[in-house]
Image 1 (cartoon, rainbow, N blue to C red):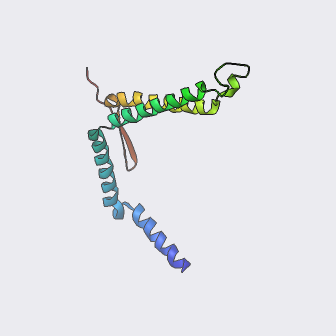
Image 2 (tube, one colour):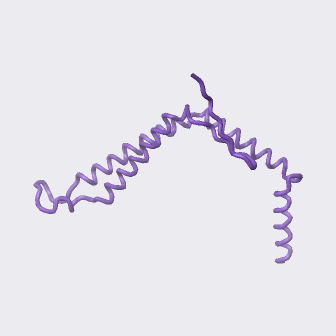
Image 3 (spheres, rainbow, N blue to C red):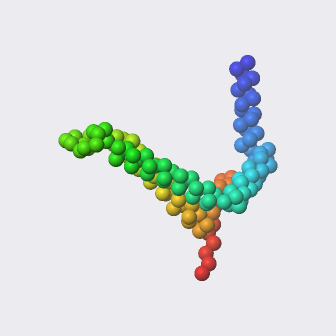
Length: 131
């Protein structure tokens, strides 16, 4: 049984790696990747990045401010005020807000970004320049 499995795997690997047998498969994968790239450009990936980025920014800043400002010492300040806040949660909130800001920045510049296409044995970068 083990020899049978080894032969089947060897045939699959050799069949998919040989251009004569897998030529249509490679072409269809490249065509599907190109169609997915054009579809994502048409659907507005930039708007999605802007919305997700703004949600992360608002949520992260809210959590960060709450964690840094909410102390457990009561109404009046006293000694040890800095140790009463949740520093780890505040740092995590500010980090998420930073990531959201990066997404908003990249989403706003997506129209001018170069197009990267990955194909069989090649990576192409195209950029339209006009002035």
